[in-house]
Length: 111
Image: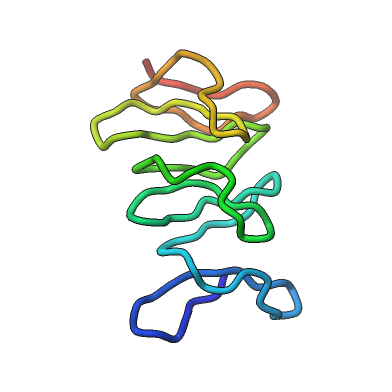
């Protein structure tokens, strides 16, 4: 990730050789997992692809990186955790007080 040098701090991404791959344009950014990275735009989190294009709109107050095609998100500070797919659709109906990433097809959750 690369920070902009302007007064407002913005995040982008660099490659292993230090070249800028995505110019600074996000309020926050996290690592890529499965070709998508958590990014913050307009105070909310969504997901961008490796070209920097936002592919899951920033609709979440909290968002975690993808794991096995699912990501944990919250739509409000008092809302429970839900899982989305790579298209930004809720993967299933359940919501949870706490949830961890999927590993080997399972995700630990607290109801």
